Image 1 (spheres, rainbow, N blue to C red):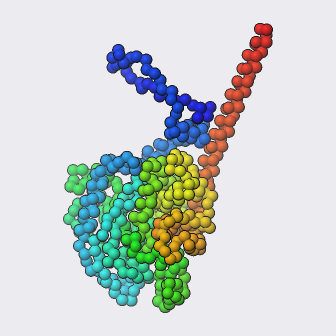
Image 2: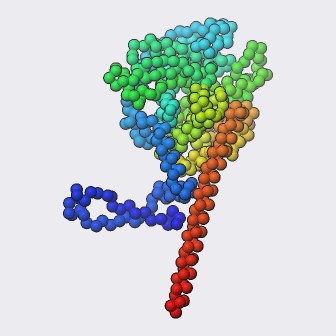
Image 3: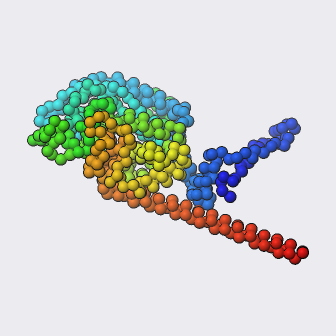
Length: 487
C-alpha cells in the first residue's frame, strides 16, 4: 500500500451524454499509466503528514487567503498585475523628473524630526533625482502575504552626491534623511493625482532610516486611479546606494564608523581605539545591497513556485508570533496575543535569505513541496544556534582584503544571531538576544507540533496495516480450515 505501488486511473473525463453524438459514446480506454512525480509526492505527503490530507488542504486554503489577487505566482506572468505595473512606471517617470536642489543642514538641527545633524559646521550638498528606480522586495518576487501589501521601490542616490568618507559619523544617514525629506516635499507639491497620501515611516522601525510611503488613488474613473484591489497596495520609497559606493571591508562588524570627537586612528586600516559600531555599519551596508539581494532571491525562487509559497507561509508564521518589526510587529502582537512588544527585528526578506542558505547548502531542494520546505526551515531555525554558528551564503561580499568569510567570528561577537547575505549584510542584525530566543522557542514549538502529527499518522498507519494483516491471516486460516473439513 505504499505510494509507489499505487496505480492511477485518469480516464475518461465526465461528459453529458445528451450533448454527445452517437459516435462519441463508444467505450474509451482507461489510462492506468504509472503516477507522475507530482502525484507520488502528494501521495507520500498524505501518508507522512497525516492519515488524511486535511492538513494539506488547510495549508492550501491559508495560502489562497493570504495571496493577493493582484499578485500571481512568480512563473505565471504579469498580466494580472499589469495595471499596477503601469502605475509604477508612471510614478517612476515622476521621480526621475525631480529637479535638483542644494540643501544646507545647520548644526544641531533635526531632519524629519528623527535624524539629528551631528556636526559643528553646516553640511551642504545637492539633492538630485534618483539615478535608478528599481522595484525590489516581495512584490517583484511574488511572495506578498496579506494583510500587509507593500511595493518597494529602491531609489538609488546618484554616486556624485556621496563622497568617499560619507560612511563615517552619520554623514550618509543624515544625507539620506534629507533626501527623503526632499522627495516627500516634491511629491506633495507635484500636480499629478496618482496618490492620495504621502507620509514618512521608518525602515524596519529604525528612526535613523526614514522612508516615504505613498497611498495610490482608488477609482478607475478618476485620472491616475487604480482598481480597488490595486489601490490597497502602499508604495514604499527606499533610498539606496550603488553596490560599490563604499568598500565593504570598511563596514565589517568590528569597525568603528560612528566616531565621536577625540577618536584617533590607530593604524592605516582605520582601526580605532573606541568601540565597534556593528549596527551602524549594517545600516549603511544594507542600502548597498537592494539589487544584489533581489537577484539572489529571484535566482532561487524562479522556477520553484513551492519555495515562493513557503516564503509566504513563513511570513504568516512570523507575523502571527509578533516577530516582525515596527508597525507590523505591534499589530500582530496585539491581534494574536503573543510575541514581543517592540517587535522582533525579523522580516519576510530575512526569512527569504534563510531559504537561500538552505538551498545552497542542499539542506532543502527546490523541488520540495510547501509542507516539506516549511518544515525544513522551521527545523533549521529551531536546531541551528545562529548566535554561535552564523549562516553564511558563500561568495557573498568578497572584495579582496578582509573578506566576509574571513571574519565570520566577528559576527558572533557583534550580533545576537547572524544570517549573512550579499555585501556582508546580516539580515538578523536588528534581532536582540530576547527576540532571537523567542524565535527559536516558537520554531521548536511548531516543529514539535508538526512532528507529533507525523508520529500520530505513522502510528495510525502502522496500526491499520497490522490490523489488515491480522484479518488476512484470519481469513486464510478459515479457508484452510474449510478445505480440511471437505477433505
